[in-house]
Amino acid sequence: MNLAKFLSTRTPFFYGWLILGTSGSTQIVRNAAASLTLAVFMYPMAEDLGWSRTVLAGAVSVGGLASTFISPIIGWLIDKYGARAVLTSSILILGITTFLTGWATVPVAFYITYGIGRIIFSSPVQIGSSVVVSRWFIQKRGRANGILTFCHSIGMTGFPLMASILIGIYGWQVAWHLLGVGVWVIALLPVFLLLAETPESVGLLPDGEKKSSAASAAVSADAVPVAVIEEINWTLKEALRTPALWQLAMGGGLLLVIHSGTNTHMAAFFQDAGLTANQAAVAVSLNAIFTGVGGLGWGWAIEKIKARYCYAMVAAIMSICAILFSTADSVIEAWVYASLFGTALGGMLVVPSVAMADYFGRGSLGAIRGFTEPFVSFSQAVGALFSGLIFDITGSYNYAFYTLSVVALVSIVLTITATVPIHKDNKKG
Picture 1: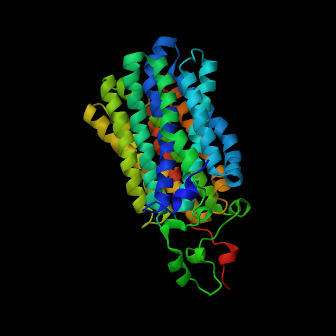
Picture 2: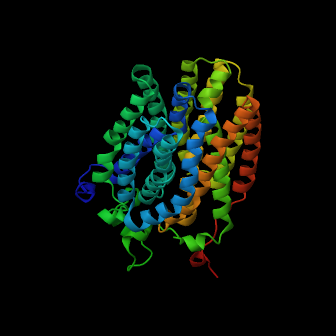
Picture 3: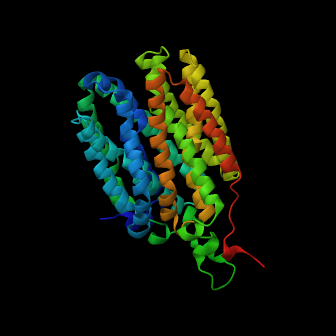
């Protein structure tokens, strides 16, 4: 049962905002498998089970590597069967695997349960929610994706905080069980009942445009009203022939190396630097809060500034933050640097989603995002494992931070030179 067609013409506001809220609920609950949530579990699980940080962080890497192969399939499924079917099944599975992680007391079981959750975090929820939002909004795509990132930030803040409280009361095993139930409560029914693939599928236009105004703005009398907002829609095959797709995919992927290499270990790193567990948790929470605030800001910025410049600015901030982290030796510094890094992460989540839709249109967006997402998931796997190995070898994260700063500089070069491609149908003699 789907209520979208019934409700779309009866809501007193553009139904796309309800689509955004529904998609946002999936962004909230994906954080059950987020690296920041695992960071909260890292200490108690390592102490109780005798596992190293590399073993725990390795589950992030395994899930990310698996997503590398699964994401193209997910993109194809979204274009063929719809984001609603993909997101509904993903949320159902995420709740189950999160619940079962509480019983995973051997590495193999943990890698299976948390690893599956990490696949869902990295691939179907990330691709499905942003594709739906980018299809419902064109002129307001930046701010819509910014709000979507803010929803992710709510989950980034809420799930680690809930996990910390639940671990303190019930222990880490029951905490996983309760987080799994929370996934279903927050997102399962809204996605199943309310989601619609495109505004056109329920008789609406993107951004809440009115058909009458669209018709009056049409170029010819025979023009279809929905053509008021023109986008050139690239197929995946066509997009693959453009340098821009590869530059954005690789440059964006490198940002995820920095993200995963830092966030997965953030709580542990700050505790190593002398912060208490609660002070480190505040730093993690500030990181999450400013990711949401930054997402709103970058959503506004990308409607005013070219996407490739936004990419480069995000990478520059992340490069600076990586160096600053290596110097943090006080509570205030840790909190400030975590907040600044979170602001950059907000852009890292908003800019790629908007850029891909702006560069290549809505028609094959699922397939295109499915192709580029392996760069993200593989990079997340590399980043988390890299920082864990550096710590286990050297006893410090500093060399990891220095390397990540250089990685950000490479991303700047790749993205700032990625100019918008011109489709053959848009070339004028």
